[in-house]
Length: 155
Image (cartoon, rainbow, N blue to C red):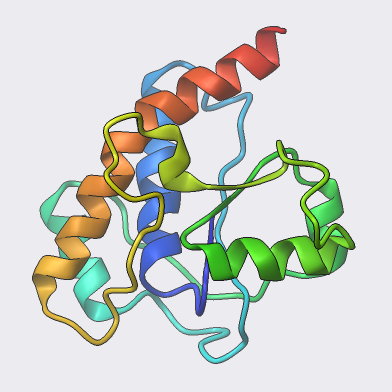
């Protein structure tokens, strides 16, 4: 799961998806992590409001922000981006700016058939409600992501 600084959207995505895969019995077969496209917050914990929202929803909150590296991207099977800017940056890092490998870097919300928009807005400068929206959007997409990954694993 990738966002800009790895302190808001991607840590929320990481914790929700880890729980979703564990609940689906895939926790031992799927590794979920998160990172940012930028280095602004490397080494920091998740944003305080993200931590509060995760805690209130019963998710773990241990997190250390990091930046994604091109070499790491090559080793990953699926990279879920929060918004289109992240997709572009990740594809550039992969050497695939035109998105020829459409199955590798995708928008997280593209898995949610009920999503009105395919991006997760950045809640960083807004109120707690924005973080709660990120959690709700991620939770809504999670079962569809689990189903897609299960299909890849079994296919």
